[in-house]
Image 1: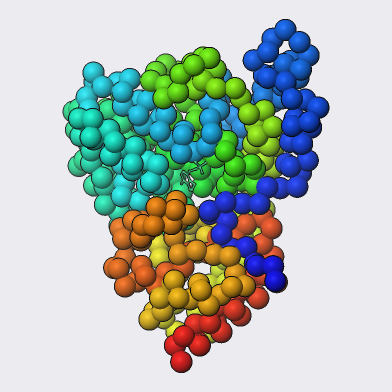
Image 2 (image 1 turned 120 degrees about the vertical axis):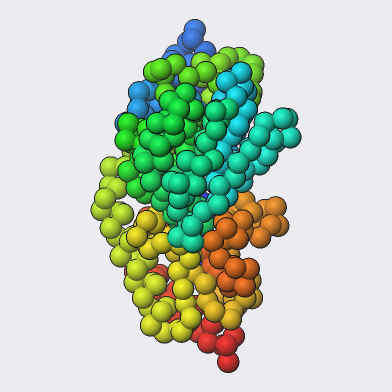
Length: 381
Ligand code: PMP
């Protein structure tokens, strides 16, 4: 029996249009984009530059500000370690929030091991960062602040424009990084509005292929990063390695498709999520939303179901593909640090993450609700 896919924060299905566009770059157009002496290379390079334009356009950036890499994990590492190391003469204090993705938290902890000083901000129950808490954490030696635009577990959308303005008012030299992996294609991501210096993106969250992403880095005023991967000097020396041309073709088209239809898709997903929430709350007592309904990614729900172990519930729901937390935390066998930051452990253990996406239908939502209600009633009986 096919499962209903409700885990679009973990990853998304590659859009058939994206897959189709990628295929010729595996077969006929297999040149290396750095080969400058023949047509295979020129064709590959043209495809890479089109992808760069598409990704830049999706976030209101210039093409020479897009550094391609293997995904948001690498972009986060390049941004945080790269900026912290390049600017350590200015100071060695870094600020992140407790609900950041593990690729941010672990990178910041690794820097702490190397002698940097780290502040991890608590968040409010709604998942929001309190601007006063951020302001109090800033110091004379703060060089880098990294705060995500949209959270992968509770879908919390932060006021990055406001937070980056606060940081830059304190000291315009502090480098502000934002992980927008979950935000791209779901809510507007505009580099001019956000006021950040560095922004991480990933293709597989927007119906593109896995293993590719980008770091946007502002050019003016000039921002230097210490590269994590050196070699052939690709991507302005910031990320060496032969460019994965088919993946970039997919990333570019995925970014274009996701931003072209953003507001319609946003509304459709918001209606579907609210329908799902309403149906569950009507049928079952004790269903509570973790985080904020208002400041949320449109397809995301994170629900606590009172008295139920989410792990047990999942094992009783073979019809559904969903999760109790992020796939990255699950890979490390860790409990959710995001839920730990906003709810008590009993509520965290009873919480499910539901991620609707482009291919989710109302019929699937209705069927999924039926399966969940039946399984919860059986467990409670
Ligand atoms: N940041 C966030 C917010 C994410 O959700 C993810 C993917 N789970 C990443 C970073 C890592 O992205 P990638 O899988 O492209 O390395």
